[in-house]
Image 1: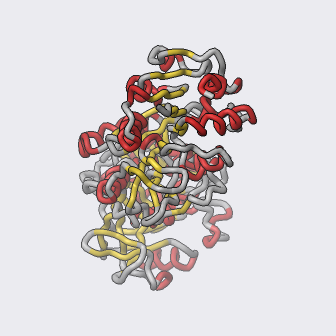
Image 2: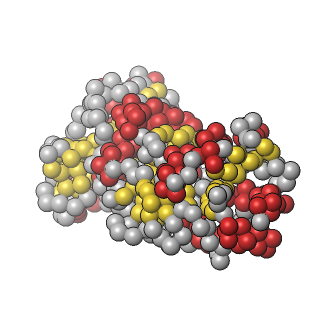
Length: 223
Length: 273
């Protein structure tokens, strides 16, 4: 697996006023834009092509990052500024020509974690997605999905929160109509057909949802 | 002996606007006093009833391209079903390709058709569904699964989507299924229909012939398109309407001088009144 996508087209409403002048992925954690943490880790893990979609204040992202050569990767930008953000699945559908025909990794640009991306990961036979779940944080106590024997379902006990990190087959998106589409519903429909696997990751994971949470993370990094 | 006439509907017996002229109706009413007349069509029991209205075929009808044979008064003579188990396996295999089928079948008891469709649709499937918008048979199936009595499993997409899927399904199900991968007549899309291997018009004609005690050589058929080739080769007399595809005309015993819009079938049949 050589390709990854960072979802960076969110509007960051809850992060205002910080996101009035900066897109969320460029907010800094420990003195470094959030998205750079992801790029560094992806590069370390052996990913070569990284697709970044962008909408809100999008142009600032390539300006800040360049072509990726300083990390030894190639950055590709999928511009959704005209569409006004296609949501996660819609963004992946649009970027699919850049992502190719092999499975790829997708990570939300607004999470912070020490999960190590795995470029050697292989999707199991018959699976269209493999999601990384995390223990439920305070702001999502009911969790998103249930995990049982390596398979993920929408309903069920042992519920966890979707980390925003997943490995996907391009077939999950390949034939979908271009346009706005959330990833949650698509995954839920696919789970009904036993085509989504997953695992629980118990390391550090934070969703940078609000200025307060960002401040907390920055605080925790200092110590 | 009473003759047996079997006609395709669309672009053969029906006019291009899907109507049946007064002349055709009168001719068939007269004809059925002394002979047997019925249809062989891709259409459903329900739809054929709508088209024919008061016109009643007096021999079993070959429906859904031969997967169903039923009389006008709802007696099912034969069904060529795909098992529920195989149908569900088809769904699972197709999901690996990120595509979900439509499944057309029958309710557990009776002859009302079911048309089940999935939540995740590609743009071609959406278009098809638009055309069926008010069809009472339509039901969203979540998750996508087969009903007990499956007549066909159909995928819509591009050749790029459907060719590898067809090859994959063939490698798994082999002769247990009939695979028909064809372009749509409009819109540039393709469709893949999976059927019982004997779910076609010519097998159905043999069944109808046996049922009525006829030899296939005694049957006269009318048609316009490639899905009529099988029955054209089988039957004693095969008549292509003048608007038929050239690919069919070469298999016909005769090409009629008139088109479907000129009531070609009825005009020919007047000689038997």
